[in-house]
Amino acid sequence: MPKDKQAQTGAEERPQVKLLDTGCNACGKRLNSWDARCSKALSYKHAVCESCMAEEYDMQPEELRAYFEEVFGMRPCLGL
Image (cartoon, rainbow, N blue to C red):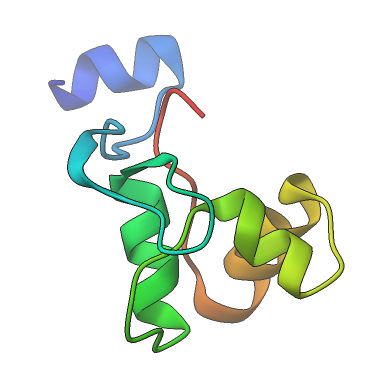
């Protein structure tokens, strides 16, 4: 998106969420690019979905997203 268009809409440059060809190692749900980024940030050997990560850390997915933004500076992909 051109910068002048960004200024008009107030939109930020954030990646769009993409579905991947792999499933969550815990529940089998299809992973997306956000799940993969989070799994990599936490150094998981096998990627898991956001719901399973949140459950493991006893958080809601929204709380987990806020945590990733605060600690790692990662913002969720558009579409989540």
